[in-house]
Image (cartoon, rainbow, N blue to C red):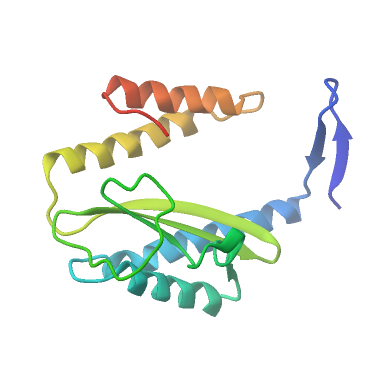
Length: 173
């Protein structure tokens, strides 16, 4: 059973059970599996709307809910951000072209738990700048993961990510 405790600074902290963590893992795993599933479909000529439909069906077929759908009016099941779209792009009729990069953000609700993941995909052959952006963001993610430990704050994680990005002349939104 999940319990609540009050920290010495007055914050209320929820203590989760091993079963809660198993449920979190299942939701996170489903989001990652959806990204694996969509990978071969990310190619020139496909629309972001078609990718959305494929992901929607995958999520629903796994007895989960696509969390973005109808959240504060969001009309689709995933977010698709092409090239200069920073985040939370809305899937539609836009066709992917050779040389594009697209970030696909998948969030699922499974048995009341959220799984949220995204992945940046090259569309066909991409240029050097796009390759560098993809590799730098991937490296920055791992820099953040490396500092995760008991007692680490979100600020510690964000600092590791931002420091790496800025060292490569990128910024974090």
